[in-house]
Image (cartoon, rainbow, N blue to C red; front, side, top):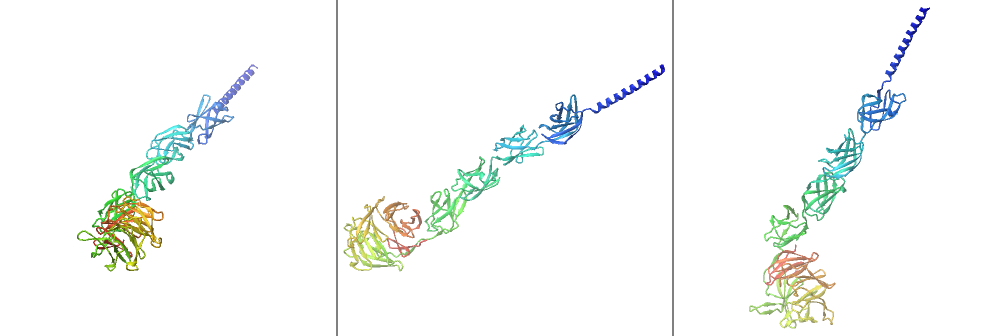
Length: 633
């Protein structure tokens, strides 16, 4: 019995030990299977703000009890699994590639592999300022910047970059930058600024350095705008028109009246100044006359002519007048045909039309007149030049009054006595004389008995005393009256201090006519010498150099440009082809009413020259009776 009890007790003890042993083993195995660990995570790569799921063992089902870091940067836990096998985290903004660690209590485990943290693509929303020089600090505003951000101006990397925060960078403009976008690069990701950064433009050259008005020239450099209207160009203070643009070249039109000055280019309110001054070259328009006598003068017109020299056949000509639009030059006595060259600043500008050198006055008949008519009257009738009245000097010096009217036929080169002055008509000198049709009007002047007041008309179709008819007397006798015809009406301009102009009304007083004063002659020197008509106006010289225009429609007398080098008692005036011509004893001048300007046509036969138009030819008579013909060019 005793043995039986002992046996049961021993066996019970063995069974109890065995059961305790089994329980102990199970408890050990369960503890080992709950050890904190990271099994995996996904995705393997992520960016800031992305979710990453971590699978493992022994995570806390309480989010706050799990501390997760990515390369030592804490990541927010957004979700957990109830069985402690899964965590969901958000990649923080400062995260970088590295191991994931999870800490629960005093236990920390790491992932076997790195989580690849990819940066977000940067974004640029603005740059300020949008323009500047090298070294200007530019603030770049945007997002997703990092300390590893690189900044480029165009293709040039900025070496001075400050990371302000993920939304702001500062960078200084590097050397060599051209206009273009600002770029921020983070790893392989990059962003471009919405607007260009504009660097101050620079001018490297102007081609050519000199040009004429309206010429097209080029400005080379850098940092110009490719938009034509974004570029403003100035020649000194004068704006120019830009007609083409690239970043390195502008095509502009030289403005009118551009000064010799620097060129300025303005782009986005930033200026560039050329190193060299632009030079406005002369523009040649014309020269006149195209044919000139030796010792004559030629007028060159154009623009920007000041400071120029003029050459003919490589001979420098004497400049007698010059301004910005006109050059007047003297032709040498030995000049020959050639092209005029205007030289300015070492550059030559040539007329393609040749200047012709001619002799305007040709010797026509050098045989002296049989009688010298001084202070006589002359008129042209039926192709001949008539000489009447006046005087000749006897060997004793006494005056010999002329009572015969003589004519000269220039075609046949013959002098002829035409008729005698009747005794009833007083002889005279320095008197008025004019022809209307076949009627020769004359009167006034100086007679042996004093200044005459009588006036006469002769019908040249008749002969004898009956051809002469006395008209109404002048209002006052004067010496040196001059007459002219406008619109078939006779005018007398009283010289010698009378300062009056009369017009004949031939039908008044039963055909004897009447002289009516129409306007005072308010001139500087009350002595008339040459007088002629051009169109419906009369022109006259006062015997020195003062020149006047009479308009019968007003009526009024206007002072015009004086005759250069005029001298008393040698002026002779004639109207032809809408212009006035005058000899001053040595020089033959041409006056153009539309321009109010005298120019030298060339030499004139020496001494006092009386000029007449016979048909369409001009002849000049000297006091010694020689005859010259003017060859009009």
